[in-house]
Length: 165
Image (tube, rainbow, N blue to C red; front, side):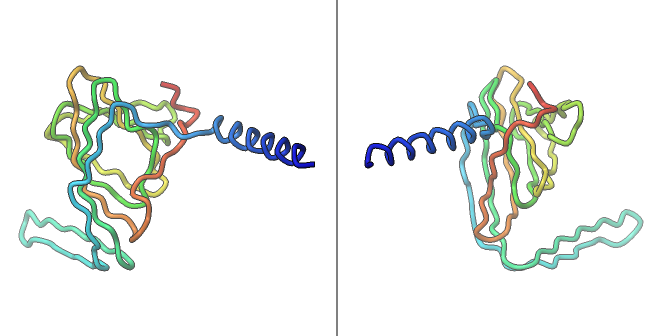
């Protein structure tokens, strides 16, 4: 009886891991991530603006406490972050080299290249994306992230069917 139980449990484990393996997340390759800062951020309701003909403004509002991060990512030539999302927005500064951002919601999966000295926003939430270094020198980004308190900062995702590269 005991050997039948072990056999049944072994087959169940193979079945579960076999199915999970076919739809597994894409792991990062050639990526070094360093958390430069992390802190608790109280609920925000920020309204800042300038006056005059060149008026500028910003609005940031959260419900509840957040975790704030400053993250340094170095991607080796040919490296990738793997497909992933974040539960909140990220403001990403490219500080060295270039990265190509692939978004899962682009039907043709065309990448957008960002060079050192440029920046872009990852909206977070359902925004599944991957950064790849398609150059021959290391690329580096600094991300400022705001996510719900105690949430995972990064959520691994499977490669979307429209992005085969």
